[in-house]
Length: 192
Ligand SMILES: Cc1cc2nc3c(=O)[nH]c(=O)nc-3n(C[C@H](O)[C@H](O)[C@H](O)COP(=O)(O)O)c2cc1C
Image (cartoon, rainbow, N blue to C red; front, top):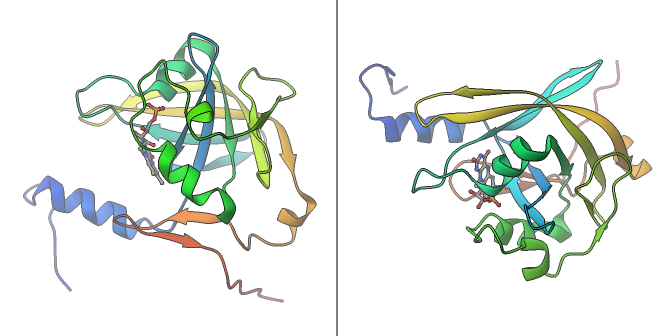
């Protein structure tokens, strides 16, 4: 086995090791509202659940290459609301496209011709046809790391779901290292 001491190793190697060892990661496809009321949509894989009672989760959002805030965190800080859309295979290409840099005034939803439906308790809408969506309100935002990254802790206040997702996650998309992804195809159930 090779060794990497974080104190002395290259930062690029450490980043690569984190991306490739903390995998597969779930992907939060987040809708927020821009200042002009249009819908912003972007994927985030530094994302996971924290607790279920209350249902809390975190998303870690970095800066753009030029050091400016990404639209998602700017919108979350301003409105305190966001929706996490769960991604199935049919949304894969749109999700990847939505991860590219769009100017703040441009809506990914309009550019990518994605349809939305209204949420129940928050202003950002849900992507139409996703297997599940979590309406969230901000509980806390913690700035961490050298960049720094904004770790958003969100409380899930309303959930939309297809009953099927309680039986199987087949077809759900996750992130691997590099530019690789995974689609759940084979599940193993342990009966005890
Ligand atoms: C699958 C995937 C996962 C991503 N995960 C993250 C992440 O966890 N944190 C982050 O800051 N950016 C992440 N990105 C990059 C953002 O999606 C990208 O910077 C996007 O342009 C941000 O859009 P916004 O400016 O509309 O918020 C990811 C991109 C992809 C394609």
